[in-house]
Amino acid sequence: DGGITQSPKYLFRKEGQNVTLSCEQNLNHDAMYWYRQDPGQGLRLIYYSQIVNDFQKGDIAEGYSVSREKKESFPLTVTSAQKNPTAFYLCASSRSAESSYNEQFFGPGTRLTVL
Amino acid sequence: QKEVEQDPGPLSVPEGAIVSLNCTYSNSAFQYFMWYRQYSRKGPELLMYTYSSGNKEDGRFTAQVDKSSKYISLFIRDSQPSDSATYLCAMSAYNQGGKLIFGQGTELSVKP
Image (cartoon, rainbow over the protein chains, first blue to last red):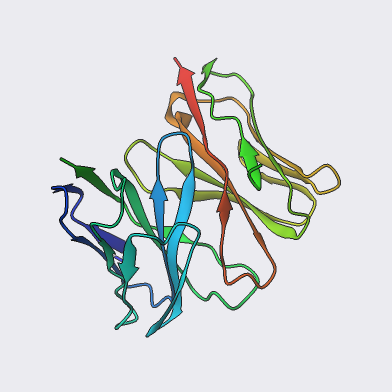
């Protein structure tokens, strides 16, 4: 089955720890995105990548880092610099970010909780 | 002021009711308008997509875009308990790298 997988489903982090969220897609999509979802705030863009080895900051990139070494993978690291990391994290992909519109397909999400 | 405003609800209706969900926006460059449905603790899935102004119908769902008023709507006819979810509007402008701007989401509950 083609789709987007995220792991783990639930993640617990202690204060001061860095954690990495995994996102993999087998849709052969060029573009990938990371969003954060908090109650009552919709989805906010953290980082996005239009092509391998290239990525751009979104609206709330502070305290996060990403890499795009392979087309199918776009891991997100939540660093200790992120002051309020407890949230639901969603990864998405689309065929291309260069054309006018492409449907974004979402993964099932990772719920991160800081202890 | 947020670029996209959406009433977060929650909205509770009886089964069979007509549901109206709405978003307003401020950026006149938006040309692509989407509605996503998100079940609890799941990723969003695309429900409807509309380009520029006009109406689009798909079964029990109708999406409307009024660019002159910067207002979009999603209507659900004969609502079912399985429609209970959070509905997110999203928009994008031409050549913006595929970036979507989301509303806050409206939580809908359809009671049997």
